[in-house]
Image (cartoon, one colour):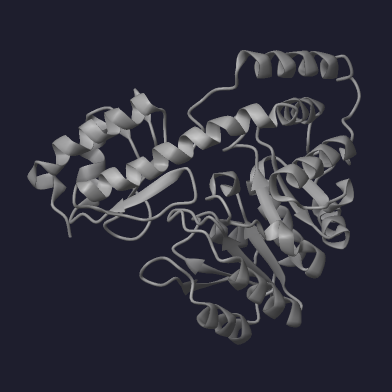
Length: 347
């Protein structure tokens, strides 16, 4: 498949300098592979805390950071620790499709509220849903997947307060946080005031490390200690730790690509609207657009033309990941052809 624009990967591979550092670090780690890895990986956690300090202004210690095999495993740890039989997790659709799977895998009840028609979240309705269902865990994605919308920090703080009042954990999933618009604060700014808050991140997107599988979160030491209880022994290999620490040493270079992707994202939104389509303002590295009478037919036509995007989200909508300039040019050319046919009818 020539153009892969379906899973929100960073289209730019690590530079030769990053690859060289990772290679040397893995070679050094390989000398000790006869031993189990550092099960508490405090060096990596300290590096992640330092990175969040630079990126979001958060003042964190290594003990306030947790990491695992992608943010998927981080989320699973959270529901293993705070969900389970007789407990409920709550989120607001449309949102990340894996959340109900995490609930299912941990025998946690699943309750879903609704976002507004423009994919924002109404604060009063969100707080009412929390009071009504009294969940053990609330999951909020910001920026949200598949819509790309970021939540106002005032709303996040209101939800953090309401969940704290009922003894629940609030998880703010910031997998795409590095792509947010300038001036949009991270939920990490609320951590000093809310020990029930966990802010999840990943290196898969901004750091171009999807293949390394390193997700992490920031929270109070007490919350992190609960996750240490449920994790499997030695869940992060010595090689994984070495790769992640090497990449973090090049965070400035890697985040430079993020600026390019932001520009391409905003240009994509403008172009889609110029074609008469709806496109959601995005703080992530993807754009939700539509709406089509038969979105599957549009998706298939693009696929037949060598462009793979994602058929996800509410009926009628499609999602395109932001790629390189050449990849986005191919997407635009392919979609232009589709829009001139009966397949491209809009709903």
